[in-house]
Image 1 (cartoon, one colour):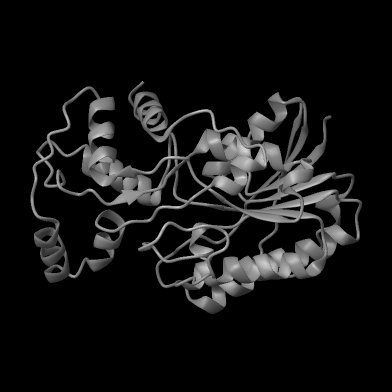
Image 2: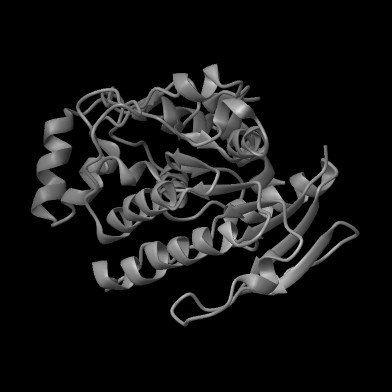
Length: 306
C-alpha cells in the first residue's frame, strides 16, 4: 500500500536517507525542510516553518496519511532547556493536536536514546527501564513523547542510539576523525561496548512503523542487534579504510585521568563507558535490520572514500 507521507526535517542526515527510500517504495513524500532540497516525481519539497514561531500545520497536513517527525533543534552550544522545550516539545504538541484534526493515520516520532538515559549506562537498557534524560535536549525529547501519548493520536515512537552512515555528523564524525589519525591509538584495552545504529537499519524501522499493527501506539529502542567494543569499532573503521587497526593497549584508567586533567571528562563517557541497549522489542515487532554494525561501518567508510 502506498501512502502520502509528510516528513519534517527532510534535509537532515536521517531525512536525506529516508525521503528517497520512501519514494522508491512507492510512497508520495511531502518533504518539509528549512533547507532547499531537490524534488522528484514522488517528492514535493515544501518549506518547514520556524518552530519558534506560532504557525498552522494545516497546509502541511492536507491530504497526508502518515507523518514522520524528524525535525528538531539539535544539541547546540549555549542552548538551554527552555529553548529545547519550546521548540522540540512544543512543536510535537502542536503537531499531534493538528494530526487529530486531519485524517492522519499515524504519527511517527523520532525521539532519542537520550530520552531514556545519559551518554553511558552500567546496565543493558530496554524500554522497561525508567527514563532518566540528562540534557535539556533529551528532557525535551521525553516531554514530547509524553505529550504525543497523551494526545491520543495514533503513533509510533522510536528511540535510536547514535546513528551512523555516510555524512554522519557529531559523535560519529568525532570517532571517524580519531580513527583517521596517522598514529597508533591507545585503545586496545577498551573493552567497553557501545550500541550503534546503521542509517539503513533505522530507515527500515521507520518503514515498518508506517502501518504495522505491531508498532501502533508503541515505543521502541532502535539499535543494531549486537554492540561492539570501542576497540572493535576503531579497529573496524581503520581496516575499512584499507589500513591496520594499530591499537596499543594502555590502561583505560590512565586515559581517563589524562582526559580529566584536560577538562575533557565528557569524552570519557563516549569512549570509556558502556552504552548497550536491547532492541528485542522492535525485532519481535517484525524489524529485520539488513546490516550488522561491522558491515555498516565498513560501508560508511568505503562510501566516504569513493
